[in-house]
Image (cartoon, rainbow over all chains, first blue to last red; front, side, top):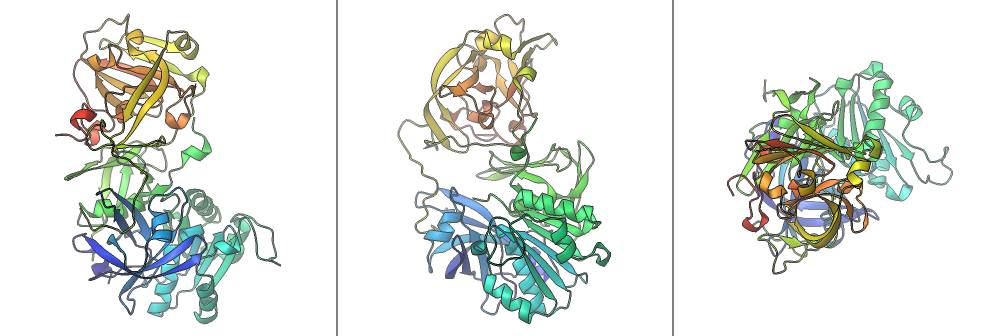
Length: 251
Length: 94
Length: 199
């Protein structure tokens, strides 16, 4: 698996949008049919290339949201619309089922969780930085492995939550998965605390103690990643077990 | 002399994976660099990436020095590594 | 060309006659940066000309502001394919800054706060072709666009118009700067589409 995911010549493939669904008012999941997809590891990403009629093209990197093997052989990307963006508004608002984009990958072998890693896992996601972490949650369920996972997911408002229903279901059904939400602008009604950013208290209460030596994956905008990683180190987590991916501003 | 908002690159070395994988047989973002400026060492994935430029500019997260530059011409890729004194590349399957 | 993504237009761009080959017209002013934006307090700003023998001549901000300045309206062409027409700037001509400098150098390296460099032949800096500009569109030049002052050398691709410029080093032999060392053209004439080495 690991081998197929990272070997072979990297080529652009035509991907066809098989299905699309909104995850939030501004984020959409594209389910892509990619012929001869070699498989991927959770945390890997793809480059997407769009070409206009006149030959102009633009390319961006997106994390893969789905786990592999997927029964239908599909690959899912969840794209957050950035209003001044060039590529993301096309992928969220314009592209339709049946349309094609070019895709190459999977790429990236560092921000990756392998189901053979025995350690407990701490996932810290900010905004759409939850996407590659969701791939890890899904891959764990698919592989039926037992490493306990904790996800701390920071979003602005309840409306911005991606995968809300699926996470609720998985917390119920996937033994050993816990999810805690941090709301930075607006909380749900009756939430026990006012809006706040991710902090020491949240990581102390809902993360793993450093003694458990968890593998930590932190993904989100730069400020989120730096804050969360700094707190982890301050709490005594081994920096070598903290992997980060800055995910902000890909327009 | 930099304001907080300008200090931070929006992306990191993870986003270089495709462009590097196009020219190397292994995933270079998993390799460890050693910064020529400050000898800081970490995964290429952790470099701060400035992508809104004529090329990709990857800077050391410790000292901000340029570690790698990638320039794509239509028919070739230029990779400037003078900011890295060493790359340590893990081999698959070993 | 790859497959066409139906309905994808990309950034608004116009191909208009009169632009250098391969360029599109833009009406905004894209910010390109290769690193953190330096914020240079004016009381720490200096511009220094260094000759091939090591002689230096420099100006602080007050001295620099006292120099005669030109108002110029020029077209600019970025190697990332956007062009912007009729931009207005105010700046000090390099003719003024190099006027009393004793040198036989044919080449220069332009230096910036933050470490950026770009090489420009001496003759391209002279005869009303280049300025150290500190106003854009009537306003103080924003840090994102290179303020307090940037080089403005509109007849070459815009990466030569170094932001946050702080000096010119005169050289008897050509030497590549930041982008030139990484594959971009040593000269960079947009009309001859000299984007990359070998173009």
